[in-house]
Length: 220
Length: 255
Image (cartoon, rainbow over all chains, first blue to last red; front, side, top):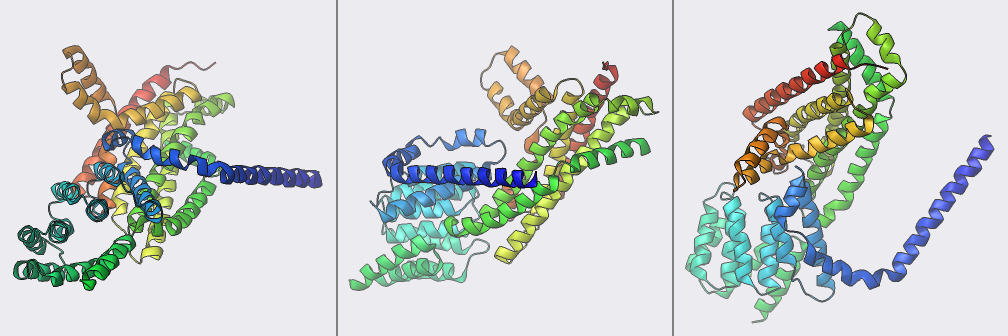
């Protein structure tokens, strides 16, 4: 009896393993054809409002899923065609689902401004973040950063750095940058310092961009 | 009270036989593996993602167990005809029902508490920081479970397990829409529709009261006033539903 059960279990497990391996092989052989469909899927990503209604009280977990998908989208395109058209859309969905989640505003604005060369859209996203998190120094600091580095609006940058330096929990460098921005407006050295700060505190993708920008600035 | 507790103990033993511990162990394993796998993908937000998924998973799992274990609880007693021998003793039908409710609520609460402890341990080990704030969110979820359990017991007191599960899931889903329902009705609906939605609003459980996950994942604590409000609302609503269940169950004829 035991031997018969054992044989049945082994046969069942082997059969399941075979089927799973077969499914994997089919996916590997034909999966690349559907890459485009996966890409287009983001076009139909529903609005944050709709996802919020469907999340049934699990909005922050849904925001994390959208965040992970956004990061994955950025990573995939960084390695291939450098097109990040949907990043703003995905980050806005994350913001709709979890307005207190700061990283999507920062990262989304950074990609929009640096990679898509659309600083206005980046600032729009940060503005939205500041409305939801008025006491967050980081959003004010990143706004100052974009004003300085992308828009070369040094007065606005100085204002936002000063604002960041007056918020609770700000690091020492916020005060330093507030002073630098007002004293050294338009100075390349200031931009180098800002990029070095991104290199020290940003995530790994932001650090890559900072390295690239530092190489460019130091070559000037 | 002793009779109610005896029924509750019995229910606890009965439900525990359903391999709840296995579910708990699987949850812990999934969380540990998930924590390791998700951290590098989340660009420095791994801790938030793990706490979020952990709390959402624990709450979903406990609610699902309350619905699916609870929907068959009374039916099994009727099918095995054990209910006749129990009710032949000097025990009131309402006491039997309350015992079932307490047993099921206690089991799912223990499961939720177990999952919260696993989550605390995983986050502490992985990120060298214990997110004690999650206990506030878990406390409120316990009260939400109380309401869901009471709703399951209410439906199981007069209908089949399949319909009980269906109605309980529907009530839970609608409970999360209660506020939206009132808001949409206020946006230019006819007076009749407004009156209807107002009625539904007051009948449905307001489950958003118990959702503090959005606070604790950002390191904020659940205030004592919010906890007190959640506990008072949950307790009153669950008692109200159990009174209704008792009235229905008392009139039920067993064949």
